Amino acid sequence: MKNKLQIFLLGMLMLCILLAYMGCAKDETTVGPQNPNTDPNAPTYPVTVTVLGPSGAPQGGVIVTLQNPPKVDSIFSAITNSLGKATLQAPAGQQVLIATIGVFQSTITVTVNASTTGNIISAPIKLVQNTALGKTLVIFAGCEHIEEVLADSAIGYTAFDTTSIEYMRARVVADSAALLTYLKQYTIVFSDCNCGDEYGYPKLARLYGRYVQQGGNIYGGHYNYMNLQYIFPGYYTTGSSGYGDSLKIINTNLSSVLGYSVIYWSTGWYSPYMDLPANSVVYAVESGTTGSASSPQGVPIIVENHVGTGKYVYTTYHNQDILNNADTRLKGIVRYFLYNMK
Image (cartoon, rainbow, N blue to C red; front, side, top):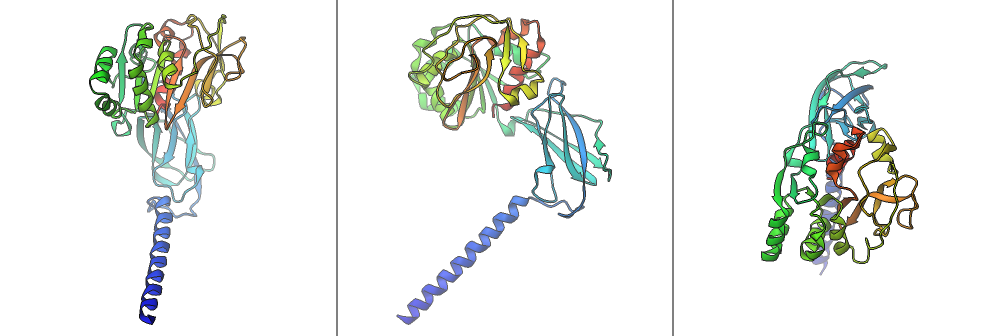
């Protein structure tokens, strides 16, 4: 009995040592690989870079980080403003910076001088799609053409797969499990509006809900609300009426990236809905309109709906309408969600 007790205690001791080792190993890996040219206490200096989107326009909302920081600290990371500029800290010497937003990523090697006044890097970082971060699908339909907006020179995004709403509807009836597997290979799905016949295809709408619940991201306008009615039963049923001539951005992240909070709006009226799911996020409203309990600042125009670990971003309007709007800055809305859907 004594020998058994000794063996048990020895086993418990070995287990504690193993757990302690694993804990230490975990702490070490959170620091990341150390830069051989620096040490954790090395002085750091400001570095300012400019990040451009695929179209060549300055891009806000991009996370810029030092690839091999000497230690874990927020000073080695920054987010670009509406001018595409970000300032972070880095030790002196040759350093690698990584710019990432959504499924886009690029790196640049810079030389950081030991200057307290800062280092302004003249060569910009231009984002490119990184398929390792996620793929994109556009579902063609009859009344909305998001693909035209994506391909516009202000956005310059043409690297996406395509399919049709007819294919999706036939496939979900034939084999819904296979269709879900097909969708799950994509990080972002753009769903064109198909003129209002969406109400007759609840099985596809519910499949979209399963895709989002398991981490997928969908973006679509106008009659996409019919898909949301099936995904969120009891919501998107109370309509609104009224007109406004401006769009008010109420989400601070979006307004910061766009560089404006109110903009002229002439994309038409698409019967928005006032009863949104409790966990929805309203990004923009029609200026000067009366809101509701779920959208107190006005009639919702851009809504992010959450289910599971994914999201379904809904715009009341057809997204191609912004191409004909008097203020071309509206294109930045699609660009923002394209880069932030992941």
